[in-house]
Length: 329
Image (cartoon, rainbow, N blue to C red; front, side, top):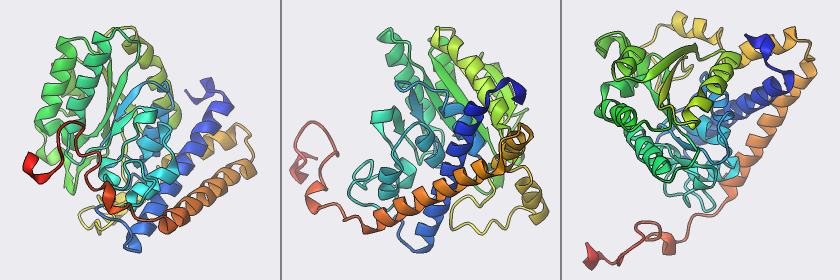
């Protein structure tokens, strides 16, 4: 399928995937230096899903994400500098340093927020999509969640609502095989995400989530029908996170040979092979990686030097009506 994609498109994806990888590595370094307030959930190994899905979204489309949402947010167009400042709790962060990694959001690019509550973003997506339908707009909402979320109530409720009201939602199950540190297959009845979505009446497509070209092709083919009012669709993207659940996770619950084998399916490496076979020179690919690492090194350095938010911001953004004084609660 890769031959149907033009090289400019593939190269755009390659650069974005390199940027996501470099951002995650910088975030892990920030965690090592004890600069991160809260947990970091890296998405190293899952970059093809973020890039392949989100680069197909229009600027005014909406996105909801998970606790593992840095890549999705970056691919939707968020500013990496603001994102890194947010991780470090600094002034100039997307949410003025109040949200951190698990709640990163950027309404200016349609990113409604990552979410620390597994599956909660599925509800938010249904609500946003219902608003779009009522306003008779032609935008869509993309809701990305992990395979662990299919065992929580919001999956049933959110998808059911989207089907009943024929909502413009693209659901993407980023199926990395694990719910935190538990192999999802051991705690999931039935045949998994696709079977459950189809039982609710949601059309579903399963894809190799480490094959960037295939993820891109499927996303491009599905989004127009959703935009035209033909109801929700779900993509199940099978992938694998190459690190632990969090930056602090020693990842002792997975066999080493399984992880080593998964590294051979690294989506960035796979895309590079495709590009090299298409006669893209190695120097171009190396330049992408160099540029991405340089960018994120600068982003990290700037974030470390950024000031803390002033105490006067403590009650800002908490609510938009009423009195924030203690007597008001």
